[in-house]
Image (cartoon, rainbow, N blue to C red):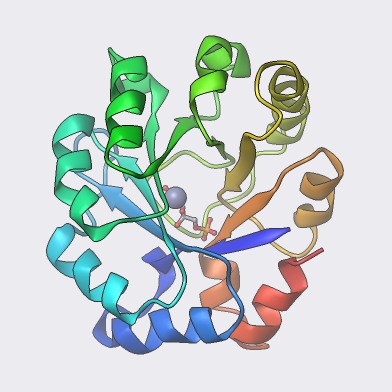
Amino acid sequence: MLVAPSILSADFGNLDFDVKAICEGGCDFVHVDVMDGHFVPNLTIGPVVVEAVAKAATKPLDIHLMVENNTFFVDLFAPLKPEFISFHIEEEKHPHRLIQKIRGLGIRPALVLNPHTPPEAIEYLLGDIDMVLLMSVNPGFGGQSFIPTVIEKAKKLKSLIEIRNPKCLIEVDGGVNDKNVKELKAVGVDIVVAGSYVYKNSNGILSAIESLKC
Ligand code: DX5
Ligand code: ZN
């Protein structure tokens, strides 16, 4: 299992330290939650802060857009050369066009599904993307409880991926911990995002990341 800690749960007064801590702690990606206060009822960070994150990080960035105007935000973050930019299918009229644009910028495109969105909604886009991010909470906040129906959804998605694009990765985001990660692994999930579990773990960041690598 690859691990992408979400810096949403980091101490923003010590961001440089907290980004280095997850990279030195063995994470695979640095997950960056971008919220615009419109698509979700929360507002986070823009390119000025993410530039500082990119400088501190020794692992690739995984940028998760939770915004209304996806194209505008792709243009803002592309110069930081993240590994992935993912955007919500629920908020994009022309997802195929935006996927091509992200790919053309040298970034790996990914699609995000909210808890209510079925995997079939993106069946005909699977051949064009490198990753699907399944939300296991409602987007907007860290520290929420894991929605268990994501397990069944990941299973369905995996069977579609095997037909359409076996190289496409599955990432799950929200309420992930050392217990549910095993179920996620069993249904074919490749990457987990974890915010509060990693940053607020009483055993420390290193041990938290280690415990997700099953
Ligand atoms: C929620 C974000 C998540 C969040 C995960 O909208 O996309 O990345 O930070 O936090 P935890 O792991 O605390 O649920
Ligand atoms: Zn996220």
